[in-house]
Image (cartoon, rainbow over all chains, first blue to last red; front, side):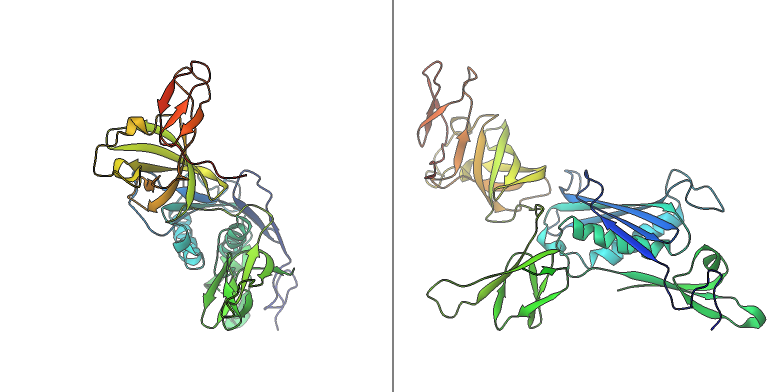
Length: 183
Length: 191
């Protein structure tokens, strides 16, 4: 088994730290830290849908994923969402809306804000896990807690490729392919 | 009481019924909240009724008005056809944000819905009203009713600004000016 640059086995996760309920203003909040990757999630709701929106007999979920401007080492992210962040927002909505009991919240909306403080790889799985914990902290009824992890196919010496779990930033940048699983 | 989380299996539907904070899937009852598992034993005479499993939380559970909820609301606008209200509390829990509702003129009283009931003799802007949710309504507001003895105005200020005292189901008295004002008053519940 080839060892990775931080000494981990290929199927070993980095140490994880999770904390909930630290944003007093929000309905629910969660902080996930996968060694250096840090993600903050804040959930607000249930709130009434605005007068301009259509009638719904189930709750609506809106997710907003955003990197902080200082989160990435290679580039400086802008203040508005770019395409990558919009795609991650949609992925978050799809992952979370199937696990929330939305039919118990008619005419209501939930807003989930993800702020990435530092990106050292596997930011999307950390966000999904943090969002799910934030909803649990807010007391919103759910069918189950959603967890996520990602795996990357990393180029090795002499065309020997290895599959690694929970890739960090270097492995993610050098990967040929990546898969994120949400369960 | 044991701590449970969403998705944790609590019992089978053969032995228990699902209460608050739980859902049923297949033959089992699962938790849908983070909290403590509690079992309420059935005290009734009905031997068929099973014990109820529920999950309770230390923090407040967010509630959303559904059909049949008793809500406390404040009248914001009054019209010949309906009164517009802001729903502030639902089932004795204060809501984080106010929902909109309307009480239509035909839903103010249980009787006399065909004759002309004037909204202005039932509610005025600023009154606090206890109502029941009739339906989810449209995108803008819930439809509420006060057509029961225990529903209606529970607190109102008179035109001179003093808190009024209820006299009957249809009038309240201002203690400062001693004038009667017409309202659809809720019957006070026994303490």
